[in-house]
Length: 125
Image: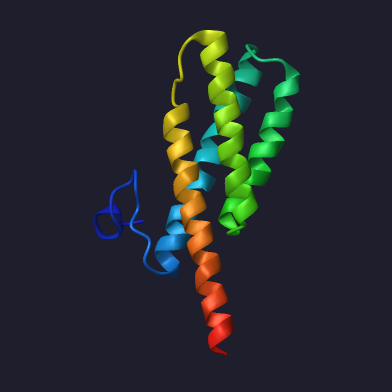
């Protein structure tokens, strides 16, 4: 990903299929980070085993973003908002959750633009 060409990291410029895929990959990277950090804290012993549900759900969401599924990016954003609410109520801070939400917003933009491109290509045939 060349951020100088495609725009800023926080609000990517989506203008073709490659830039749409790159924007959707932000959801994949976000999911990988969330899975990795959750797994780390489970192994360290600070989190209960129930957090494996988080790991599985974010693995599926990340894979869905990578495969350009619109519903995966939307569900990822909804889960991040839920975790943002929980984190604020439980700890009084948001941590990295606003950054994750922004990554999923870009993933939504990328997956929807990709679907629009595919629909237009089918209509031209």
